Length: 604
Image (cartoon, rainbow, N blue to C red; front, side, top):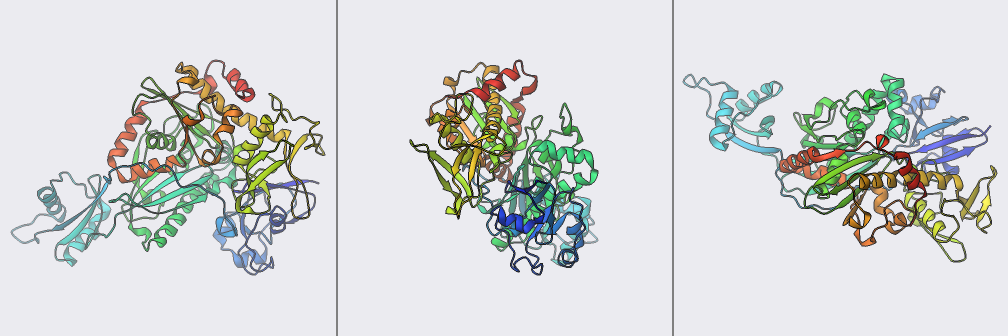
């Protein structure tokens, strides 16, 4: 009986005929798992997490090597895990010899730091029988007299340490104040005010450690979102919540534990401690927003997909178990509507939407692609379910960008494919940018027709066992497995690009904009940064426009999060921008099905 092993977050699927260990399967799929002991079960380095449908109990070796709290969450050792049915396996970063390519860089936007947190050194008059003011009143009076700060709030939980610190340090104290609320006190002023900006994506989580006063990025790191173990798209994860309340807890824990792990590594890199992080800014789509904040997400799983709240929040980091300074706050910008969240707002703000009168199109390509059109003083946004095909899902040899992935493809006049592979390694699959190149090159060389059908008579097109035609990118040899793009794969990409094009066309129709009027197209997201814009236009994913008008901005959502972390002015402006953005629900738009069908077929 054939069964499939789905390796995440890499996105490689292995079809198997016989039972084998997860370690053996990973090797067969070309995935380099750590196995320092050679698979004998003695090193414990090949840790994986299995999906809920894996019912085998942990082995004695696994119970010896892994803590009970890890076992209860589905963690196992790859050398001990026997796969004999369909299974999804999540590989944590520490278990991989070589990691995934996860983009954290984005456009650089100049902004003057004006952090929410400020440091105030105070020297108070000691209490006497002639001056019986309480500690709190004494502090408030001094803040007003010395810094002209009125109405400073003193939370109840800070009172014990505040009182003790005053008396131990001869009535000298340094206060850290966030938006008028004291969040911490110390003997002296900290050398640096540290903050963490976080972009929680469906596929990856990107974190940036900043000096709040200078605005300088001190360290940055990205990691795969371990929620992928519950499904590659948002709806699959939401369905998991509907099945079990325990899944809701695990989805939130996955995000927060990953952020805490990354922030710990970032702090270590700059000789700091997590307890020094005094402010956070967190952005994400509406589902990631709810998962991260422990908000009930059931309302997002069914129509009309209404969030619990869409307002900006400023909450205690400890309330969602983020590691930071006691009293540290998390600023969460507003989400817009549907699944268009604060990451889209951060992208638009960082890209300058809302300023000037130019007609601009903004596209953040991902599992859910958000699109915005600015024209005539209006900004309208929508979300398209483009799916994870451009991240390698539902593509036989598809995978995310990692060592061994084909990232660029060209087809010569004689019909042969030339492939560039990440890391110059033996190819084990193909990632989004390579898939897009292949579709465009097949179209350019007339190996596919206007409907995306492969020419079965072409010398590089073969019929697979199921009778489906496939184009051979790399032929099999002693060092290389055969890698193909099948008609099924092409159809999946056409559906994904059709959804994106339909979203753009509907926005243009709604605002009565001709493609020739578009002055600027901003493409964000990891896939968007590596894709060839000419190819995106040639296959009809983007409207037919001058290629010079297309600009990629990387992880602009992360840039927007950094801007809002270091500047209260940026927070205010972003919230004002959110109030201007109109949300358009595509599925209820007149002739949506026609726009989608045209998007699938269209090509330049």
